[in-house]
Length: 148
Image 1 (tube, one colour):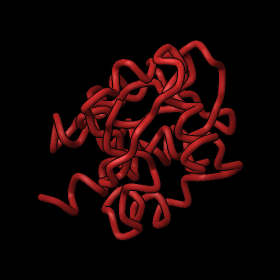
Image 2: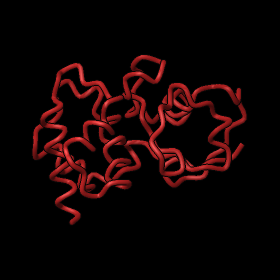
Image 3: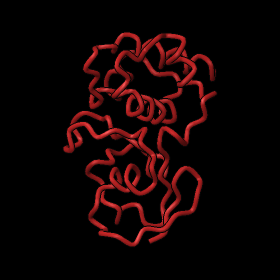
């Protein structure tokens, strides 16, 4: 099958039921997307599939045929969310952060000026073991203001 990963055309001829996560990490060497729970409960593996946030640990490669996958590596370092993450010192251990940023990017695409309730609802499925939720919310708000 053919697909695009971070704007690059790639091919996959393996098991169509293999989760996208393992294709990205093991075959594409894109290790920014993390394995967390393997059950789509923590959000560490969040990527975009044709622009929508999905949990790569449970979405099979078959779902990516002829589609575009974007990982944290596919988002520019100058992206307003990455800048805001630094400004607000969001990461502590950093393990969940790629999934957090990918979910936040999906939120801002859908809701350019989110309220606290919008942010809380959109980010609910992304767990931060370090508890940086207040800083995550502040960074998302800053990123939203930067694009206004």
